[in-house]
Image 1: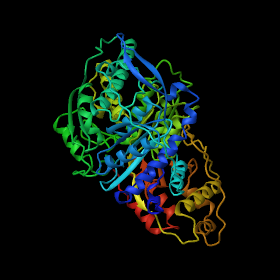
Image 2: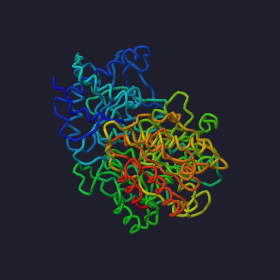
Image 3: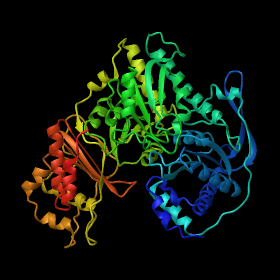
Image 4: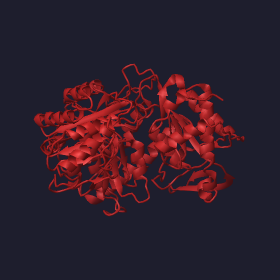
Length: 614
């Protein structure tokens, strides 16, 4: 068996992803065996619970309820899908064949979004694989997976690679089975975060049925939301009426194109869809709505159609960006706040305040966000970046998180209405529903621009990728050095992480800060820098009230802005973002970070100062 040394770089913090040349037949075959071993090890867990382990047939009675008729076959079930990239379907079919040969049952979904894979995995045993590289360039391939409804951790991904090169084998034989859904099965399906409706398997579900069941589940959510709203207000709203909105949607030639038009047509009166033909060559650019100037076509279409809002989905449908009615890209911090507000204000009666009070956001989000969330009555919780990490936090047994979001556009509703997964389509529909309902209840035709103008003013840079500076072999990494020096500066200036920087709120850290110890190596730059810092210099760089967080790189919150510099989890780069209440505040914060980095690397300091405001 090959050593797969070249493939080691594919095993990243969140998934398997990299250049398509590394996805050789031998590698995919071997990876299929490792997945079979991984999922096969779950069998002992399922045998303890026959309901989770048996296959089932689904029928719908006359009162639209769903009944499940169990049989006695006990097998591990894995759903598998793929995106539109050249090579993804072939990889998915190879994995399906290997898993089937190794004694597992496979449900083939075809071309779907990543959230749709997670939705279908929920209907079975929580196991799923999708071959996708999300928003990456066209020559990149990738694989994401779920085990027992959960995304793998970084440690688990690296363990999978170690198993891959250990040359262990796992073998048995099985056959992919077949089943069908009747038309009645596609209506009034009772699907929530805690229920499933079918465990009957088939070789390949027809694409329309894969989409229709998913759409039916979302329709049920919004039917319930409408009923809740009718109870809460005296306004006469019709359950089946469409939202009085003009919406433009850019699918970016990604996997959402297969479902977007007919799904949004069910909810909105006027929907214009751009680039909805899935095309792995990405003729207009990478399917990444966060790239600079990537939303130009959407902005122009919103203006020309006099639309209320523009939506943009990434390649695999788990990230959302929006454009307001003036054609301006909405800051993701503001979008995160709006969606969190929706999760909190539309919380089901079954969730009490004490059980669903936290909102999770990543370390790259702006300084205004914690206060805005606190004003909603939520506890702001800051965490390290990573959508899979956020999903793990949301799904924790003791979680009190009702909503989680990232600057990159991943948003997770955990209010019990739908599966707790970062689904861009679902998040967009929740936003549209709330927006239309708000205008209805208030009898106010305020545009999205008017709502956003009520939020605090802010000037920020984009989330920039910067080259990792080269350091001497005996040096610590640039982030290790910066972390140690900032911690030292904070101690020197007698500033604590819990200083009363903000009058009315505090946010909880998702992990403790690093120890304050400074590297004592005589050749390490951080020791040299420390020896030349005076108390007054420390107070100048980190004024009283500055909040330092080291859970993921270095984040500094000042009285009028913030900055963050961290190691990227998906590339050999640093990511940086800065924001201030004004342009002057922004420039001051960039200058502070430049001053902190200059002793370690002058070029990095120059790049930080040069980062333009959005």
